[in-house]
Length: 299
Image (cartoon, rainbow, N blue to C red; front, side, top):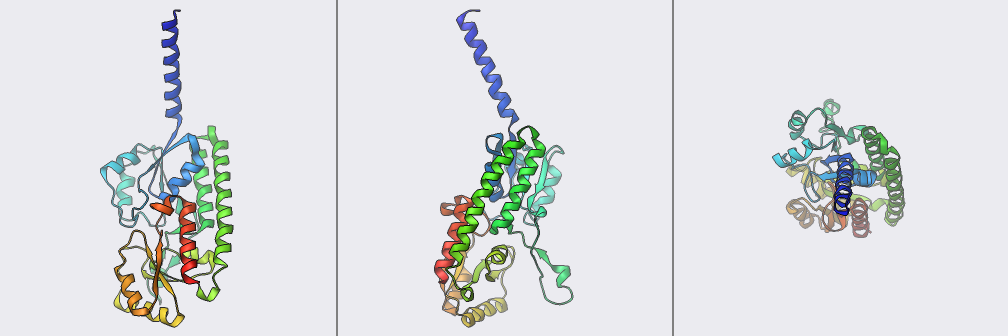
């Protein structure tokens, strides 16, 4: 065989090898920015992750587009936040996906906090799952294990790689949790009152001993009533709350009005519904930003 022929044969083999490797990668479409990061960290070189919902988007307001449906359809695994976060578009998504696409609502495999819409005999009936599990590091650890196991089921050949990726990410989360506990310890317990734009931090509050007073409900389309806003202003004055917090994806109008009436200041902007631009581009960055903003404003 001549040199030119040998070179062509080598190139052809290299192309086939590269194509085979690319085809072997698991394609993941994620409707959660936090799950997108988890899938990348756990999956490593064995996965290709598409952020269908992108950092900075409000997942409560998201509407399924033809392009996003195409990305989901081309995936081997579709990751959802679960616990009702996906809202009205979920039925259309499930109906449109081919049977071979596996859909995993990760939050549904994590214990839920619930909130009753009203007190009284109908409260249990109306109780709603809180979908904001990612604001708890311990719940994010559970989500990491769920994603690891899903990838291993899809691609048993690389199960050891997924285990190693998950172990490394869980180590990062444990270090992050230790830092959060040290930072929160700077804040006396009687000052751990967190007033936010919408009710997204109950899992965080459970872990670190905060009381939550939110202006809007579990979703950002639940407009606050006049009586609810009045009650929050009264609570801020009664407790001597120094600051209330905006969110990076929400209009601050009502929050600003509350500061005028209550005397509290704006303590800063938090990442409530997932990753976002700036400090919140990573999960660790998001948590460090939120905790530092909260503690420093309330001290």
